[in-house]
Figure (cartoon, rainbow, N blue to C red):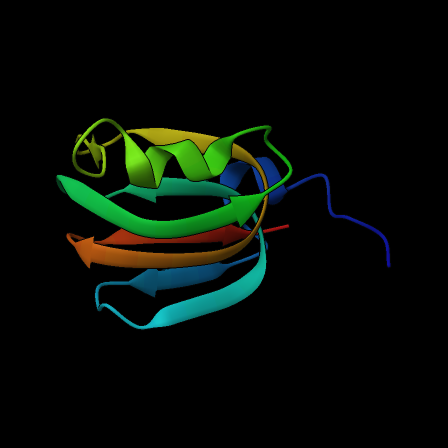
Length: 86
């Protein structure tokens, strides 16, 4: 499947996530819409799961923080994100 050159501006769509259910997809970017705590995340970034075990508690992504890569799964504890399709 060809990838659209417009994915960088979100024209391939995405998914707004604001609950604590596990979500799977094919995303190239995840952007925190508000301060957001991630329970689990998987993708092609080495050690990305360390976001969920930062010290004694999971890392909170500040509002407007963007993660780029190839992501397949995310579960939130708090907050909301937009996961943009690859």
